[in-house]
Amino acid sequence: MIFKSVLNERPYPELDIASEEWGSLAPRQIKLSDLSTIRSTLDLNALLASDSTFFGDLFAHVVRWNGQLYLEDGLHRAVRAALQGRTSLHARVIDHPGS
Image 1: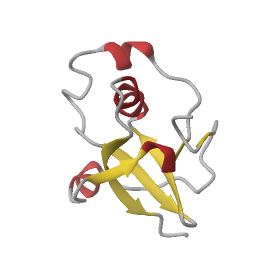
Image 2: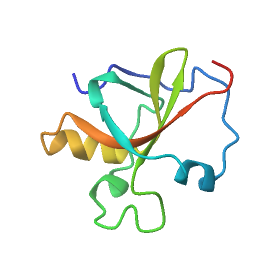
Image 3: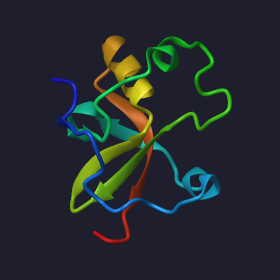
């Protein structure tokens, strides 16, 4: 199993955080097996694109809520890491203010 769980929606209230705020968080390594995804579908074009992060953040975005880690953005990065045989990825992690 790659992820801890695969969900179809956020179990936490939506975040109101700007790109600059994500950018101010230092990335760190997160085990894929500790992550729950909030999307159950993947855009194959995003997975296969060689420049998929050209206009976005290089790191996945993870929300910690009630002690659990949820992959908010970067599913294609996480799946690509798993396909390359890696068990972790670099991500920016934010604590949800409601947790």
